[in-house]
Image (cartoon, helix red, strand yellow):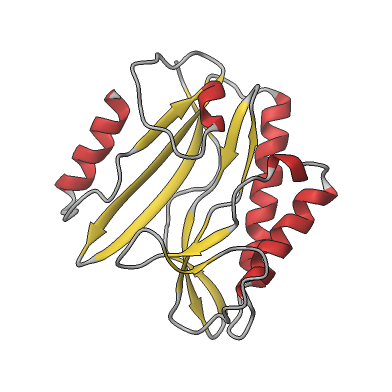
Length: 195
């Protein structure tokens, strides 16, 4: 709860007009839930922390999700996060004007399947975002919307395990003539935090 409060305070100080949804902060096994709100749970050593925050500026919404690790990540967690990052890269590579939205999801899903984690890939790869948190295109099976220059997508590949929690990256991406342009400059690696 303290982290969520600090995040929202920082966004407001940086001129956010409003916070479109309560900031998501979770750690350890609680990161399994895609939409979860902060509670008074203490973050323990050697577990992952998920921060999912959004803010509105000049009428448009930006959303980002990053993972951090308190202490040192265990080998399996690092491997899972690396696979999530690989799926994110496959989705980015697939973004081109004229491509159908479901092809982004397919590119990420095929990568996940090659690593044997298809059952843990329970959430869509992307959705539209702009003046609302959820806009078209809404990625569903067989989504036929064709990408056009100027569209903004929210990529959010993730793997979710009930016993150890979830691992994800969320990124705002602009569709350009040359492909995808990431709108976020914040690092995507799973940072290690000293405790």
